[in-house]
Image (cartoon, rainbow, N blue to C red):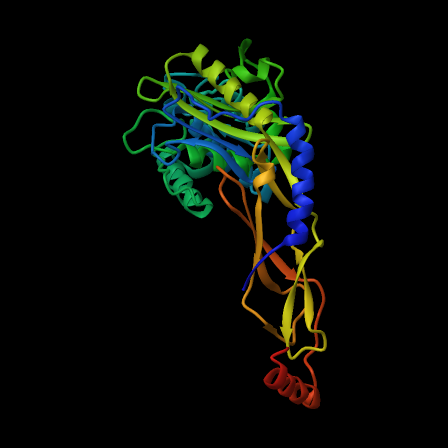
Length: 382
């Protein structure tokens, strides 16, 4: 059964009219020079923009986000401590590219290696962490691939811990955004490392390469990348007034273009969209018909806050409906999932939210069921 929500639609229409007055101009389609890009409103779990988001590409140093995820997982589980130290191998010491400048034979604390990898993008630090956790970088890459499958990163494959060029080392923009989102949500105690702008090791100070950290736009992470094949890339996140966006851009021609396109995409996302709370957790959305219950209707409530990112020029065109298989036979237990709330807006992916029974409904006794059956046969009523 699918039911349009006339009362809700009226309520949303009122909200839409209010916000329409705030939108001086309609939002325009966004264009970017990036080869691949994606922008997600993490607060509303909504994709705002995408361009070739599922194409597997060389992620360069952005794949160090996965290396960090592997370390954070072990820190959270207690299998690893920030004070633990790992031995610097000759392989790690000799690795080219960006470096933390650890010395072969030294033992370095995990807390320092993380900063060396995140702030300085050190390939050497990444390898030391990989070898310390898995014994070898190759074994660590296998663990990365296993974790990627668990996270649903379907377009990712890891050959190393650094993002060093390898034909077998690939991620998609969507996978990078998904991974960044998981890291932000699951490891807030470590995420602030990505906002650090400078780290010094062995008297060598290096600044964070993320250009958005210096632009006063609310950015607080995550990771740049650059190789000849990958171009200039960035996975970034920014928060304003409790609303967080996650963005990936790849394949740009220069560091300057990377900075400009990244800022432009984030600004567009904050300006043209707003995360709207349609219903609060536990709020009654609709009532569903009940068969052979002590009550003929059961309230349907949202299991979580129903939040959706909406373009400012589309708020008066929402389509909201509830679908369920009904009438729903009693008994019904409070909290049981009974229906789905679907919200659609032009140019946006539909969002669905589970609806639960707001209260329990007991089944009628034998006489009540008999009378209900007769009533249904004669009058066609439940």
